[in-house]
Image (cartoon, rainbow, N blue to C red; front, side):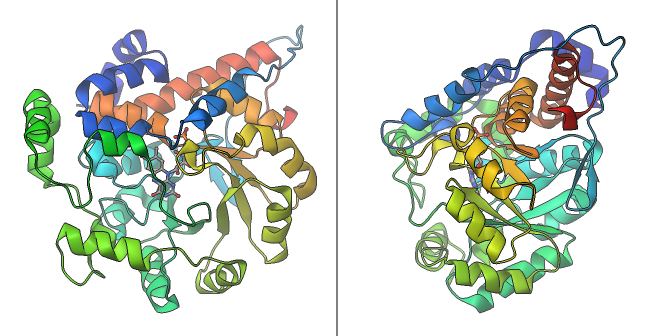
Length: 380
Ligand SMILES: Cc1cc2nc3c(=O)[nH]c(=O)nc-3n(C[C@H](O)[C@H](O)[C@H](O)COP(=O)(O)O)c2cc1C
């Protein structure tokens, strides 16, 4: 049955992304919820990300007659239906089995980009046909360039046209909340985990149907297919030595736009331009990586000043509403990505979840643009 049949009912019950978050928390086992919402250290940055949007206000202009806001957005020479897309999220199937398929289908339907993570639980071969021409690929760059090339070739062969190189994970984050919740790599089956499975039967049934989540894209390169070996591969051979020079070499291997994700300093934005990057994502990884970092919204105006329109600026970290997107664009972003919001949707409503998040954001964007007195996003 299609989302459209349920749309009105779902909009009444869950008119905001935070309503979906509340429902997802009830439906997800404790380990999956902890993995989705965790920050690191004292988790100050999670709150700071949310607060940074509240601190911005926009002064509306009135008496402009009837307004019909337009949401189509051009980025890297492509037309997208909305000024936002779905951020890369690793271990996705832990939150909801086949979440990647659900999000990829939604991306294709609404013409928004979906970025498949290197450490997603589905492969470029599976997701490529689902996402159509809306596929971006996120790279956690392997230490050796041959392996980079293999991964990039797989992504390009399967139709992914835009590359995000994630820069802000120089070492794995501590993420204490996931440790406390009992999420281990490789997973240890404990009585507590079994109890979580029993008390969340829909998640458990769907997981049993798809098979336990594993990093299916990189499985191929690990010595053995078991979780221990894949975990060791991720730890020892993915990331840890990324440099500007390596980004420049990766760019030569990719036929399409290349974007650095995780920029928080104006000098790094300048550096990205100087090595020929096509765009940047101003991001603190949703507060998951370095708790001392600023909110993206705090650094966005200075970065936008330095970039001065030379390349597009995408932003993420803390976006939950259409109004947040308008605020980010008013401070200099050209486009936004949302990570948790889409997983809240899928966790709450599984196959209808990603569509419903797009519909909420669309409604909020249109409503707030009219209230602001603008028809075009350029006016921000
Ligand atoms: C569960 C989870 C897993 C993530 N995995 C990745 C990843 O594999 N690669 C990556 O570049 N960013 C990853 N991120 C960061 C997101 O791409 C994005 O920067 C972040 O979610 C934005 O913040 P938001 O969740 O507040 O929207 C992850 C985020 C979450 C919540």
